[in-house]
Image (cartoon, rainbow, N blue to C red; front, side):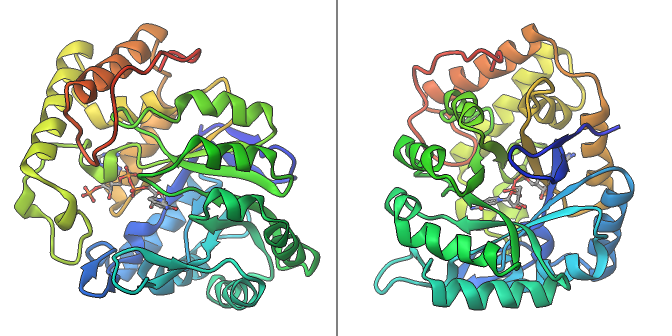
Length: 343
Ligand SMILES: NC(=O)c1ccc[n+]([C@@H]2O[C@H](COP(=O)([O-])OP(=O)(O)OC[C@H]3O[C@@H](n4cnc5c(N)ncnc54)[C@H](OP(=O)(O)O)[C@@H]3O)[C@@H](O)[C@H]2O)c1
């Protein structure tokens, strides 16, 4: 059984495993850049979403950006009302002039239209959780932002609100802004063995009444099995990101986890490392095949890792990143301390 819990400050019952749908959205290209994933057949995508609901998943994460709305449309066709759906808005499929930074808009006009469009695609009267997609600290703190998003709740279009922070550059200031914003119920951040820098913030967020949502725990799949740079299609965002060094780092991680823990299924170990069965948080996993869904559910139904195993996997990730190895995206990895939950 996948554990469920009541999301802090809400009446939503959610599962600790959430299914992420960036991959199911398929390709998205902006200015010649692949920002999506290779297409998944519609029948398979719908089967994955239905099976997830049947097997006890009670949280699906999406965005109006994933496949330019395709992921929301699939959810609208396949996901029953018993599953909480969390979408996002505010990120636009266009670059700021002269950059490869995506434009963001969190003003009332844009968000009102974005929410209406998401509701149509999701075929729902109300969005369970609406997350701002990558706002900075100033936007999270701004009284106008609170007024805008609370207006969406008052209009009955959205039940609860959250923030999904940017991947590479998330700062403690942004986390702090989320902790202090009364309207924020959930805070989504990247967390995996090579990206542990936000771990110390999670307890703090929980004490502030916010539920952490952790994503990219398999490093976009790079830590799930050994990879080669050429295997990703040109429409897969990973084709732009992987380097010989990141492939080598991931391979070393996989070997070391397998030997240290005597584990055959390293992906399962990494998923269980991200779990924290004693506290309330959601771990998102992006799945694009039914077999992956089954393996992922298996990892969430398996006994948790022991404290010693948690520490060993966490230490391995820190050791590899502090020696300059990083399986997905560069970040300052050295010198982090161990947290109370052993990671
Ligand atoms: N800014 C944001 O708000 C933001 C950013 C990133 C992600 N997200 C959310 O978080 C979700 C998850 O993040 P993610 O997709 O980046 O990363 P992820 O969950 O770390 O990686 C997903 C990939 O891992 C592989 N995989 C999944 N389950 C597996 C299993 N049990 N065994 C082996 N391999 C497995 C698959 O890769 P292959 O298909 O290649 O085998 C899959 O495509 C997204 O779908 C999205 O909902 C949000």
